[in-house]
Length: 324
Picture 1 (cartoon, helix red, strand yellow):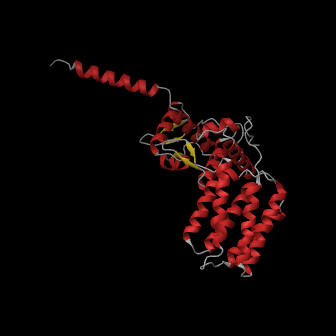
Picture 2: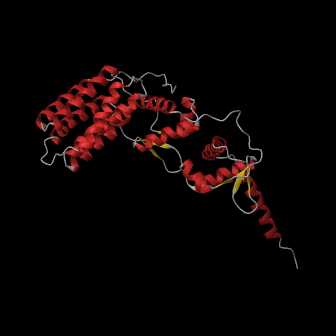
């Protein structure tokens, strides 16, 4: 019987092609994910022999299992992890360790990076789409800090993960004209919300707002406090809209806060304006708790008119913001 030369030749070509694929340069996503896996191994102190579950890694790195599996194969070829006898991957016996364990991101670290990204987006220095690696290189930040900041941005709908990898910034009210239009719109609906026939103030919410404003007045001011300031302000205005009992007014205010959020995290109006802002909010609460809704609506209108007149400091320098 003659040997099947054709089949042998096809097997050899298939083997050669497979070898060529395996030796091909890894993709950018594979490199980023393999670095992220090694960061997790080191930061969590995973012992040699610990199984690296694809599902858990995919959830931690916010991707599907397929790119994680490819990254694990890349690490296995580099002998940074090893494949099991049957299936799965495990921490290698001699996985290279960093000279010292990376410190856990502190709130100040994440808030500083948060503000640097907000300033650069407002100034047009950051593109609409970025990757974790882009942000790490630009701000000289570690992957855990960048991931924490991106998670926070995603929570407030400032960014959205792209299919595959990378992030896209959501639309904001960035330019002066959009900001002016926003305040004119808010002046139309927010004071009116206090005069709705179904308006009912929640005493627990009012007490919580009063406590948060008094704490803001008492705390020493720092740039990183601007994030908490905006969230407190957003909660105040949304709470008033919710008390109106009109769901459409509430949705409108929530949408405005979402669009304004990222552009307003970087507070540029000074500490004195923080004090004015808090005191005006508290005065509005005083009138509402006294049942004087018309007086409260007049105060809210005056508050919004004053805020609309504030001019933001320029953020168009060509120098990238610093995260620390």
